[in-house]
Length: 375
Image (cartoon, rainbow, N blue to C red; front, side, top):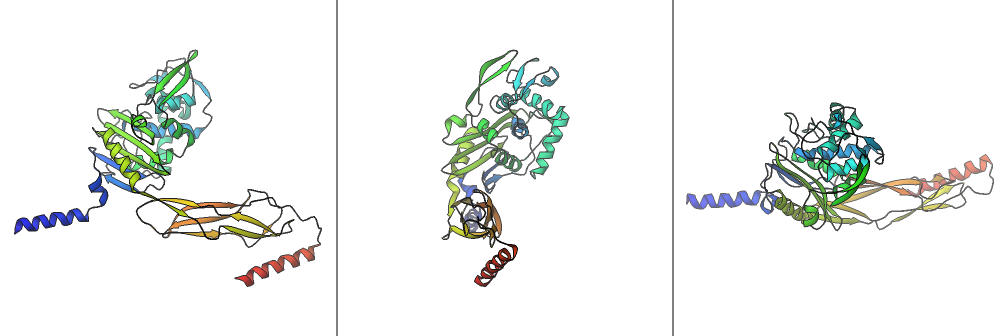
């Protein structure tokens, strides 16, 4: 009898578990899988455990480089900048290299030299740049992350969590330059003294072995073990997976990404009334059109979505095509998930007929009263 009760209890516990705990698992100390568009969690395991992250640190370093802009700027490498051990893109003192090539040197070859040079260029010193890294982490709400090195070399207080790293990657992948580098299987760059062409190959095997893989970054030290941040997209769905200290990371990420893509739903929100006419005061035309395009919402599981159109009662001429007229707010329950601007569909010039002030005032008042009575 006791055995039967134990079996029943075990079954009930399994039924109470979230579906993802039964569908996927990893060999990692910590892992997470998220919807890249919304950061909704699809699967997690010890996602808030603080752990070293090795070269996945370079996601932050590369992001700051991209946000700095001017990637074609060329810099000269000094011996001081190269005082770092580990993986390298092959920089030497005296080399001339662009910020663009430093970006690819970090993301493809995982160059610690590229990360260190970036730190000196953007922060003046390594410590100056690390301060910028932590400020950005704070700005993004990464509360369980602290950077000490720009490359990911081990340090006592250098740590993150799978959750924070996934959120950082989701943010970074919205940067066009970062995303392009993260998805590149190889790149031919030109640097040196004098600069000459050479080709770097991305360490991320998933870019070749998984359909739709688009990034992000590998990492390894003896202390951290194998670390991996990956991303994949198919049919408008995007997912990001993170594992920290995972001896079987390549296979685990294939399983995670495939499962994540299967769990995301795309919902099209298309209002019945997709075109609005806004009255124009003192214009060559009486009204201007604004259109609401269908909006695709990415979500995990079933959700209820709604929208709210915000438009003025009237506008004043002149109006230029593409000028913002209003907005539409999309919600999941009570939570705002997106705001899209609404724009004028054509130019509206001032009326050619000159009107005195009393006449214009009368017309404006009539229009306002009309709109009020229509409510």
